[in-house]
Length: 193
Image (cartoon, rainbow, N blue to C red):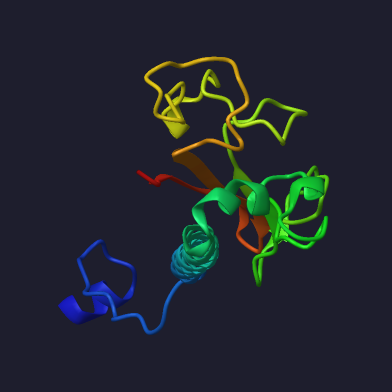
């Protein structure tokens, strides 16, 4: 008789049957977690790829700047300024025969606002618009200026393009690469004492 009462809806407790499968809510929750995980992984992968590209671009720029510095140092010291300044009229030999102040870097493009379209530039302590002048009173801490360039013990406002004994040089590469814009700057001084 007890069995019959339980079957007819009596409030007696009965164990539930184990369910099979997942509910729709559980599936949606799992899929959402999976999508967010994949998005996070793809973002990390993209960031890593961009960082690697920036590193490669910076390495290209640094190597190009070093090659230019080595070329300047390999020049006869009195000709170094004239061969790598921005004015072709004072080039040793024929006008326009020297490398000049601007240079290309393989794999890198100049910034859109760069007038000459080349990402590399050699900078000397010369006033803007006066590339033939090498000035001791030029104010640029990156180049270690002002400084006595001809060794006479004075810092003056004269042009020392023909009598310098110390030559401050900045080689700068500014580019726009696949990973965005970048800049590399190398500063040095060469001397002839």
